[in-house]
Image (cartoon, rainbow, N blue to C red; front, side, top):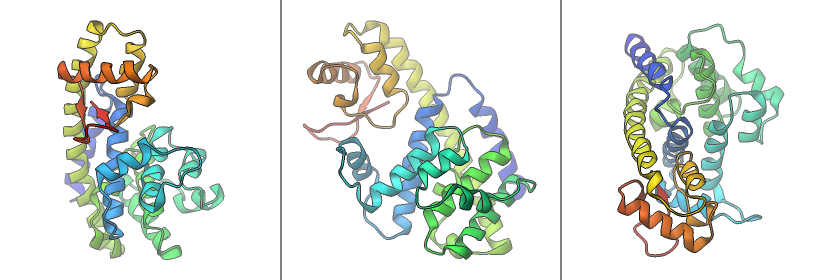
Length: 262
């Protein structure tokens, strides 16, 4: 499993270095997958559609709820370069000193270090599975020399894996890293094709501010028209035009409160 995970992660490392890959969009979509997996581990019913709605239509002062909090934690973890400050912004319940202690020295192999971080946190804070998974992926990214966290273990580890310790946990982390790295590479290929298509049709868009709107769509998993830098009516027309051009998808299947994504 260590050989397979090394091969998969090496391939993903190459993929992440390609300019054609829309890095922010890819990390945002992987954050959704990781959040969905964590929420399933907790036994809650929310899935991708509900999570997208919760965050896209969240108003200032509103509570996102337990599932929304998990999703926000993953999104914040991947938004900025991997650092103590960024991790504290994602995991506000833990101090930077505590986070630094859990991450520890980075001398071990990446997957081994990630498994150690996860096991350490679960021993000290058994109910903090989400924090443990985010920091395990942070340790993995640091070990691989990645500037940003790329959620792999958060999505790949199964609920039963979270109870493992020692060598069994390490094998589970290698297995999860292998499967998630392969899925992430496939996602990168798909998003690269989609992003090139939306860029190719962008010159056909006549709306003022369409270029800026396209940039937003290329960085976020799901976008409400109200989040685009256009008047609401113009934003809705732009999204409908992009659907006609095959450049974006409507993600909800609703007639109102719609969300769009590449």
